[in-house]
Length: 105
Image 1 (cartoon, rainbow, N blue to C red):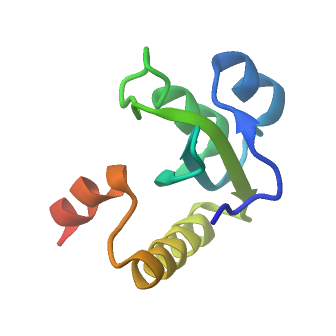
Image 2 (image 1 turned 60 degrees about the vertical axis):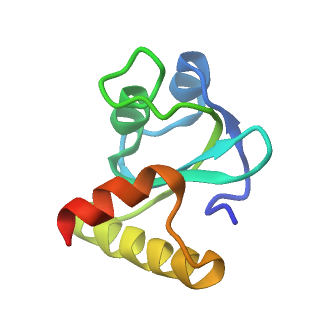
């Protein structure tokens, strides 16, 4: 399950080449194709925080995909829908979304 048609390499170079500086949702995916995290925000800026050297690293991420939305409110609605769909399909949230969802509950 990926939101974008394409997966891009999750490296600083890959982010600057492929990610846009717009609001939306994004997924971080392992080498094996497992979704590790579904995030929201300014896509390029948010992805950079998840690099190993970033402020909120997602360990094990090799690829990313994304979907642009009109604004942050639409992005947050889309993220909630994606997380709900993932939860229904796999009976749990992506690994790095589990802590965040618990904190918000």
